[in-house]
Image (spheres, rainbow, N blue to C red):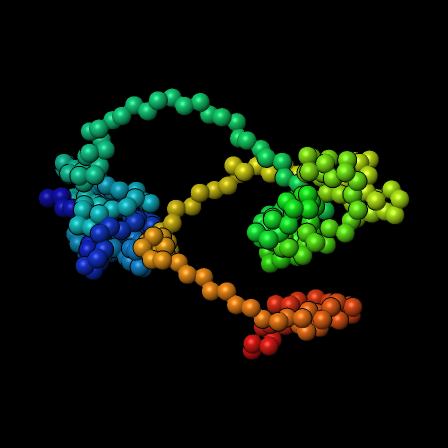
Length: 275
């Protein structure tokens, strides 16, 4: 007689498990205790063992399915035996209710032109202070060479460009077209003119739809849910401090004059002092 193998209950708080990988297929012979599949709870990965012996007649779920505990996952019996599959409630409901989805017109992926940074697209983002200063001075963010962590544009990157003299026409064109003005132009005293902007590299087109969605599973899913709950149920508090860093900045300026120490940042000095 055909038997059902159930998804075991792992602890009092586990309500479902995600099937990661099947180890058996229809037609395979299994014995008591054989590992049928690997499943993932919200805290760990487990092996589900067979509670019946015989031939696998049917698999009721596929890899990636979120299976409620104590629901049938497999039918085991004798080869050629007839059986009636008792589908889990969730599958029966989805099967009985068929909703026709309206036809949707697939739109072409929209491509957004991003201003280049010396021929390389800006991917590291920018700090709020850098964005504010960029708006105040009328300097495109893409014109800055990022020196922050992971390619992030910081305030000093915008200030480094503030001294570059741009004519009003060149500034307006740079903002309108998102081009990178050269550090030295062809005008008097190195002033950047509108004609100098035509020598800048071509803009790089970034396809924002070129990505792959990965579902959050297991412990990462639990962490994400609890972080959102924390933000929604607790008040947020930010603490700000102040310190006189003039001596620190003077030391950093002295280091910049030497090639061997020019790579030492203020963050490095602060970390050194703390440690």
